[in-house]
Image (cartoon, rainbow, N blue to C red; front, top):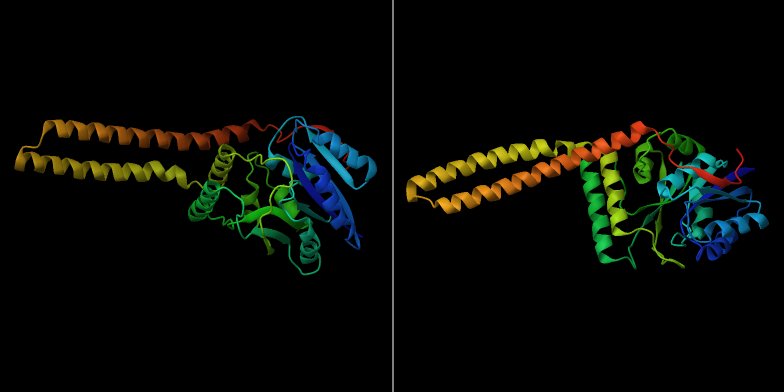
Length: 312
C-alpha cells in the first residue's frame, strides 16, 4: 500500500487547528488504497498549538509532530517535514484552511496515476487580499522572472503533492537560506497545475506582515540571481556618461550666456547626493550577498527540534 505524507507547518494556529483537523481527516479518510501520515511541524508557536497537536496524536495514530525549540520560519518547517516524512508521496498544506483539502484526492491521482511528478496549486485570484499586498506580489514575480533563469509561476502556492524522486531532489539542496518557491521551480520535473481560488482564513490572523514579505522577496532574488551585483557597474557607466554630458552643457552655457555660479553649485550638490545614494545602494546590495555567504559558511543547523514523535 502506498503512503501519503501531508505536512502541515504551524505557527500560532491554535484557533484554527480543530477545524482544520476535522476537515483534513474527512478527506484523508476518503482515500482508498493509501496509508496516510499527517505530519504537523510546530514552528515555535507561543499559544496552545503544540498541546492541540499532541491531543490529535493521542487519538489518531496517523498524526506525527515535530516541535521546534523556537521559531525558525516556514521554510525551515517545510524542510523538517520533508526530512522526516516517510511517505511515497508528500505534500504541503497550510493549517489556516486557505488551502482547500478537498483537492488532495485529485492531486494525488495526478502524481500516482497520471504520470506527473508534482501536482501543485496556482492561485487564480487574490480575493480578500489587500490591494497593496497584491500589487507588491505581482511586482515581485515580474522582477524575479525578468532577472533570473528560474521561472516562478505567478500565483504558485506551496500547496502541492510530489513523488519521492522530487522529495529527494529538494533535500539534496543544502543551502541554509532557503526560498522554497524558487527551489520548486529550480528542480524542474513534470508539474500539473490546479487552479485554486483564494479562501479566507477560518480563524486567527496572518503571520505574513509586509516587512516579512519584503524579506522573503529579497531572499528569493538574492538566492537565484547575481544580477543585482552588476548594478554598480551599470550605474557607474550611466553616471560617467551623465557627468560628461552635464560638464559639456555647463561649459557651453557659461560661454554663451555666462551661466549662474549659484545654479552650477546647486547642480553639483544635487549630483553628489544622487551619486552618494547610488554608492550606498550598491554597497547595500553587495552586503546582502556577503550576508548570505556569512550565513552559509557558519553552517548552523536550519532548525532545532525540542519534541517529536517521529521515528525514521
